[in-house]
Length: 112
Length: 114
Image: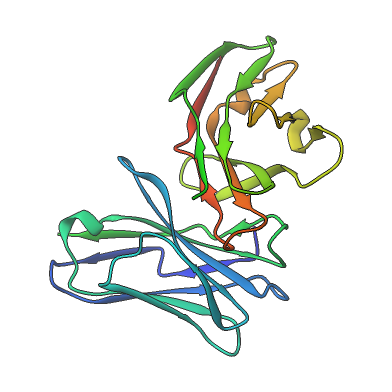
């Protein structure tokens, strides 16, 4: 168990809908990273938050947004969902930028 | 912009033989380098990292990696492979001087045959 909790584990929804993925980092970790893993594109960096502030952005679509709350949990919001958004979404946390990432078990999103 | 490449989609090795999983990187400054392993239906798990110092880094489960600055490589190695090493391996890089994003390679599937 990595100590990073992601909910829900599975999510099935329809095109055009909006979903929220939740991540609770390890106790004491201030950094939260979001990644999208798909078969054809590997593990894609989406966004990084540190202590509530956005620190780096990857190729995150405008339909996607994220935030980190004062209690350090983070949410990834995906809207106007398309079939191509079907993927495994991982959250990871760390103490600092040179430290290892601890990954959650992921949220499997299926858009039908 | 930082990037990382894993040139092999799959590596096949016989149990007991040495294994190497290749990784090359590109950053504008000095890198932080990492290796992670992913087992089926699981999140990624940390194996080892290079920040500074000795070019040979030792990690979990008997794995090690060699940092080569001139070749911008960080290959993962193990002297004697086990069937249980079969998994998906990812190299990752962060540019110390750049933004705080950590970029992962496309992954290499390691298959160890008995």
